[in-house]
Length: 418
Ligand code: DSN
Image (cartoon, rainbow, N blue to C red):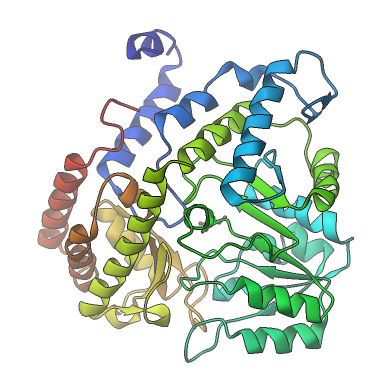
């Protein structure tokens, strides 16, 4: 659709002003939130297509509505591409989000009241792995494992001890703020030993796994869940992988278990993203994401900022900002002033409450998508260190914001418009 046609359709001034402002914000700021990315225009076009009009409860070939012949093609394309990309026997592309993928996976494996052993939220876990106010915390018995205080890494011997002590029905591996390689064969061995099912939520690292930059959980886990919008760089949504038998249970746990009609326009966008992820350029992108993260962590370390666990193996890092005298919240705000967007984050064994926190989480997926490379990471680390050393200082803020704007302009996200 031409820009002129799009403009002609824009009758809702207040709404489109906010959308345009968001597009300008994304272009102007450098996005360091580890769970965000910039999807391609083709992904976004699929989400804006007529498929949003279609009800298609059920699965391809077995729908509760007529007129599904074309959306069946779309969903089959998405499922097949997911299976090929992750070398998995079966896929479900309908989850509206990662949390709904996790709901379906858990309900496919166990009933309410079962014990789930997962990474503690305070040590990098996720809300849908057991927060008291999440469905997991409400309907299941949650036990947790953590990272070691000295190494700030998961020690698989300790996970095994916990698993043998609490005897979970589900052992859950996966994290939102953990920068080290997850040992899926070891998780699988522990699950087998204590009679648990292994659920891996690889939301953060799905793109890395697709590119073989992080070892895959497929073949080790009973069920693998993910989101499609983080390193995988697709539309917002979830996806589930398993063997064919388990997938029958996942399918009915998802629909009619926890969802109604699938979002066919989003499934179309997932199909586009999964095709993009099969291209050699995507593997190259994921390698650069990890190289950039390693370089950024090293440069921040050289500027005196402590990186949790001493570095990173993936796309993100936790930076302990205690040495600056700031909380994570204050650091997030100070960096926001210079158009560097990130989020405050608890660090392991944090003494501060979650809304303050002692750390920030930084990720390289989005800045790598717009083209920044290893050579830019020293500059970026310099800006971060300068701002955190003098938060709110007018001269530093002005200078860094100007330099960030210049670099952002040199690397547009959507050179032909969003
Ligand atoms: N909120 C996501 C993240 O930032 O990691 C996880 O759902």
